[in-house]
Image 1 (spheres, rainbow, N blue to C red):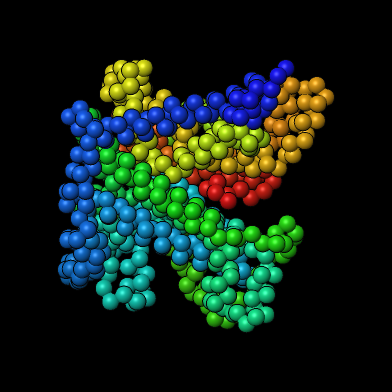
Image 2: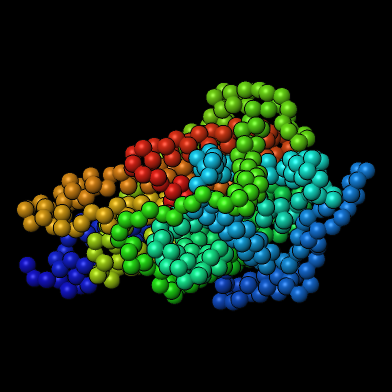
Length: 615
């Protein structure tokens, strides 16, 4: 059979091969239809005014002080105000308009999480001290995702009668007055305490993978202490740290939990994510191109963060000549001053950052929480998970949506990783690899907004069960499954791609040379050898589907019958007749799901998997 140059050029095989072509075309078409085209539809909506191509909606954003006010900010960062019979420091934040507020919050969270994550990672990677194993376990706690409820606990921690003032004002007397955080400062603190483990995981992996001979050579040349860290250790660990910081910046941009919980302060509402979300709950999103324009502004900022970090890291050479060998990471006993810093600063800071998760558990088992600590003990809230019909229904809904999404994610991840990894010379390979990676930089609220415009305006979907404006027939579960499969694809794809890279292509080629077809070689050789990667990636993606927030509380909250867990948690937190305790019980359920997934992933894969899926 003659060689087909077009097939070889686009698919990397000299002859047409159904398995290879399907491996390219299935994920490409899926991502085009449910990621690229919806974003383009939103793009067209944002650039049309009165039937003509126009920048009107973008001008309405950047020309309005409400959205863009860089020169004359209002508000205050901190102010001493009367509170009862005393004075307190109220932290709120300056108001530069919705767009700049979002950027400043994102940058602030990136800086704070990098400081926290790098500090914890360096201590754990470089020092051996009594209690280190306990600290290692405690560092696992902040990884447990409990949407909304952990932010409620953070808010309670920083009230005038909260835990922070109880420790630092009443007992340690380190504060001249109690402190109270609200507004943008509250959002920054809550997001920093939530997202710093992402930087920690990446930084820790980077530190333990540094060739110790490089630091030893620097020490032989006279470098010591912070100078050694600044000039050798930190630059070598920068790729992992930068990757974590970039993702934190994107997650901060799209976060809705903190702005919703702190919305009692008007300035906390002036963030892009909250503005787009509020357009959904108010019905204002219907035919509103200004929100489409705002979503595109958010997407542009997220992509700039993502691509800038990749470009900066790619500018420099981080390879180590002896990386292929084996070495023992540099671990030393801390000196007295270093031990003092670890025990008096690092560990107390860690204990404060894990209290939100501990507080979720306390809230789930308490009768009330008015002051510093929860009061009373009850099992009624946890019991409601099994006895209350609407709670049972949202759990069943989330399990159903996440399970179906995982099957789609596995198909997409396997085909995309196989095609892009095994046929790298194909012209479609880099396109597919980019499309499979880019969803990690696309905020969930942007996907929700693009799906809203896409399914409500494109003829094949308009008026169907996917059309959010068709309230009588709309089935949120279908839209959520599609959104989950797109948003959580990179996590499973990374795991599967790593597995494929570890299986030499010669094994498949040998099977094909002995008469096996491509499909037989794939199913009998490759898939069995990467099965652990498939299972590990599937479980980690499943956890993230269960706790998906942005899409869940927008598209998922249109019909209460089909609520996912996060939509119900948001309702319980914000509704006048809701219950933070019941929301906390759902948070505990999500914690148990996450713990089970981590344990199974570690047992099945025989290695320590990053829970965030980044290292």
